[in-house]
Length: 401
Image (cartoon, rainbow, N blue to C red; front, side, top):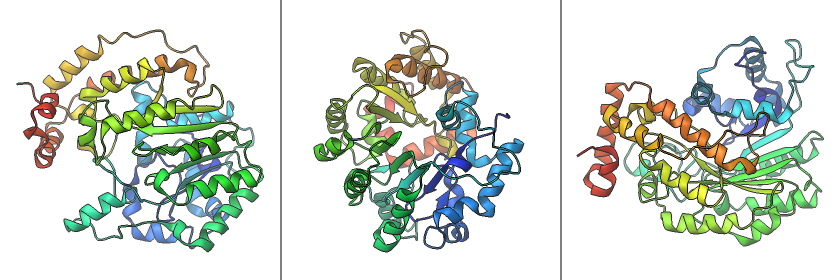
């Protein structure tokens, strides 16, 4: 099978905060600004079953089978080129083998996975995020006259639409995986009732239930409900373990984030409930990302990243060459260990140190790529507009004095 092939167009239904469908949650979202697409392929106008059978998804399957690369899949291509795992590889890994029934004449497949955004309500304005995933960003950009869309994007506010969609999911006999995103799920009114519905419907035996949180809040009651499921993964989004994180994830207090993460880590149960540190390596975070990796290694905490691809000027490769050389020298002194055994599952938290090492090796490979001086200028112009270079503690990450 070709190295473009991916199971996502067959296996998953992805619904964004505004109700629009998407083939994969890790695809670059530039096309979401095309209103015609968002309105046409939307849960308001099309059932999940119809989405899986529509021409757009049919073509996505054909392209995967025929090895046609999709620019929207750049995140996976970039990560694999750097020698690290990608969502494409992790999704294929779920099934171990490519189903024999997958052939060009078999372009319809019943989904087994749901990737649901419960809305864009969020209390942070992360520098690499967008209005569709953060109401705070939408509000700030609207005040600056840089955004004309709604501040709140939430298809789940329509009770009838929500109930219809969840009923369809619960009735799907193939339903095995659920990942919940936002916005920030822990401040969303739908998260806890959804868990209650799953428990009441006898769906505690799902192979995977997960959500990603910014850890600005901690909810003991939700964690107790999650403990009833066969396998749960709570992803905690954080970029560094020092003050730089507050600048990247605007509105956060890193000390609070780390304290809440410590509470999440207390719920770990091997093979049942995992806490995974989720980070987005970029030009903004890699100058201090080893602080987070060390924090995780000290706590035996597993790490999984999604390398930033867009906006392009924020890619780590576009840091100045002298800054990159300093980072490469420092990361090369990291106490690397042996890789995980061949065939080990990428989500097996027993190999947390191997996963951390693999992430850092991939970052080094990205830093070794040449920068585009135009993109570097664009990056530093942005740092200047944000005021980062006026703060001595932050400036030292990006400028060699």
